[in-house]
Length: 187
Image (spheres, rainbow, N blue to C red):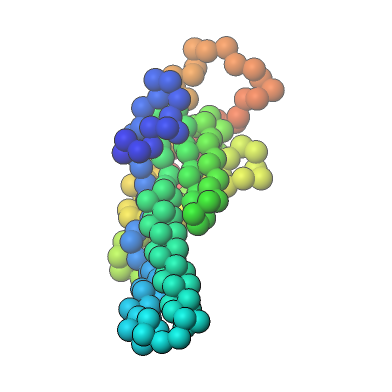
C-alpha cells in the first residue's frame, strides 16, 4: 500500500486500498494478448520481407507494447483508498489520464453496494457507490471483492469520523446532514 502514500495528507492513515478484481480487465487484456500474439506470429514473415513490411512489423510491435503498458498502468493505479479522514477515488483511464477525487467522511451521505449478473453473484463480487453531500457527484467502483464488507467499513469510518468531529466548532454553511442509516438498518 506504500505506493498510495503520495495521495495522503499529513498524519493521515491509510486503512484500506480497494481495487477491482482481475477479471474486470479481461476485455482489454484479450485485445492486448491478441496483438502480442499477432505480432509474434507475423514477426518472421514480416522481418524477412521488404522494408515497408518491416516497418509495419515495428508499428504493430509498438502498438502491442503500448496496449500492454496501458493495461498494466490502469490495473496498477486504479483504486479506492479509505483513510481515517476521507475516501480517495483514483480513476486511471489509460496511460496519461488520471482523475483523483477525495471526499471527507462528513460529506458522505449514502453508501450502497450491488451485484449485477451471474458472474458477480457467483464470484461474490459487486460494486459500491458512495453518494456525497453535493449530490452531483458519486464515487463508484465495480467489480470489487466483498462489496458488503467495504460498505460496512466505509460506514464505520464515517461514524468514527463523525464522533471525532462532535467537539469541534464547524462552519454551519458547510455542515453535511448526519447519516440516519445505522449498521444493520436499511434505507
